[in-house]
Image (cartoon, rainbow, N blue to C red; front, side, top):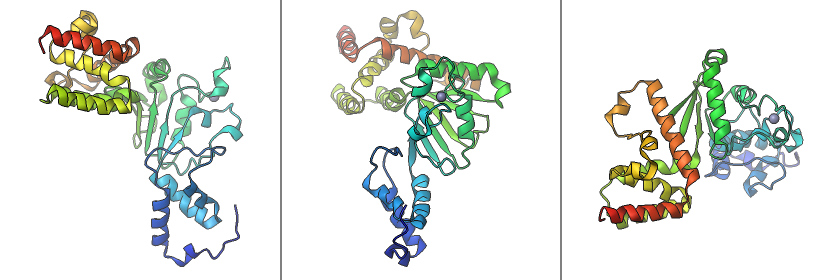
Length: 306
Ligand SMILES: [Zn+2]
């Protein structure tokens, strides 16, 4: 870090104005990676100009942005030189793009406390971040690991300061207790969580088939696969043909989110219903292709004369 610009013109400005400049330069629309070895955006060069600017600007960087990390960055057996140089004390918003164990622990018989299925070490590390307000972990590529984590949390319950992992909506689970009650802490199956709400709304709308197709086309630009698969299910549910697609037994796990039945359930029943529904949808997404789903939807439409 250079100290050669002690009288930077920035310091002729009021602190408020400097803050505005930092905020303008250092606010990014998507989660940011702070990797040492990957060249950052040009604006983060500001952080390297001098110590006072670094101090002031870094606070803004952590205040306004979501920081993207992985278990690599917390793993106890990973070389620190390979970890993101994150200022844990300042992080407010955090995102994990996967729930996978670190590269180092992936090849070991005995994984570290951070990378173990119960993620105890990871929760401890996150619990030690004093200003942390939001954590989102995308588990869509490690569904089995996440489900084991949820299972272990449920089994240990009381011994982990009341840790609970509750399914609150399709694909989304909230972590409570264990010191996280002030933190908006969720695990999210990103394709499901981002696309389901739009499609569910679409299925209740009165739009024509052409208008529906426009919405689907827009969603396919976000994710080429998921919209057609979910749309088949929602369409079948709306037209009473769900058991034709899923079979009688599987279709039983379907939850109509707009129904009074869901509202009348207690928290535990609601969690069980939404979890069962989420698992069913995840299984369906894995088992079929978008092309198959479009073909089946065409057949169903023909059979009801639409
Ligand atoms: Zn590890």
